[in-house]
Image 1 (cartoon, one colour):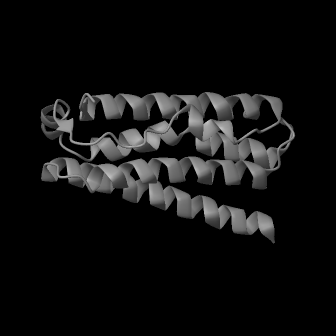
Image 2 (cartoon, one colour):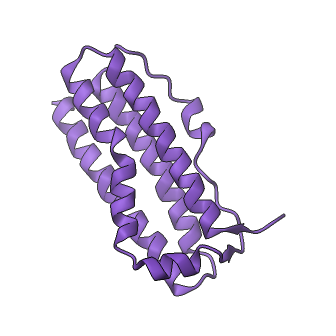
Length: 150
């Protein structure tokens, strides 16, 4: 099996987050529930939050580690994350939150797999930080879910 580089991982993350944006933008355009629309706006901005997290790492470090290979390919989020989740235009905010939490869990799982590998400390730090951001996002979504559950 061919080694996968950090640059390829970052590319997969970008593709997945763009898919999330498209997915939630479509629901946003089709729903009439204002709570659902607000949530889909928040979730669709996920890529911006990841870019902000990446910006915290010095660009020279990112440029240097992009070419480094991982010893083991992690479970990369993609279509399999979408297969179980079917959202209709009349999906409730609670259903949308559950989907968003599931997507966050896919990302956290991948980030943890990468940071547990025998990798350079910059790679470990980067993916541990991304994991922290994703976990914080998941906590925010769970807090919002609690408000809807009342």
